Amino acid sequence: MIRYRNLTTEQRALICNGCGPKGGWIPVPELFLHEICDHHDFNYWIGCTWRDRLRADNQLYTAGRKRAGWNPIKQSIALTFYLAVLSCGWACFHFADRERDEADLALALLELTPSTMEI
Image (cartoon, rainbow, N blue to C red; front, top):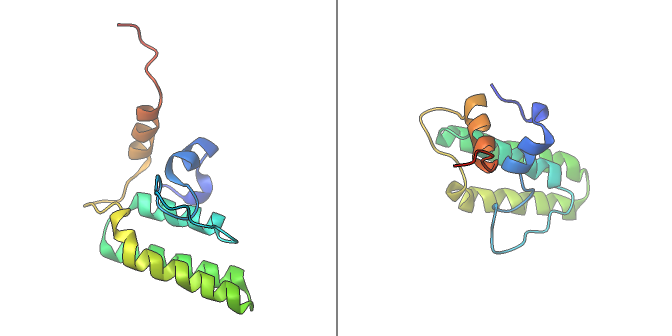
């Protein structure tokens, strides 16, 4: 099982991009949520079922509220990000019969590496 905390810098760069969809056409201000959004990206990349997606979204909201502390503006920002992923996140989630694993991650990294073989 892959864990977010064990990802290398290269693996994080492949999977995570902070807040907003990877390659999205509208830049999303990250404010105080960059690391939380990266973890959310990882959970979406792992994917699987609707239940897993809702768990990822709830973790985003819980972590965002915790990071916001007692600041009502930051609390409203955390809620806004949560509502955004609830309504639009389905397009970025990896729905599948199983979670992605280490083999999937290794394959994704290989696909990024240009071939060094001469033909």
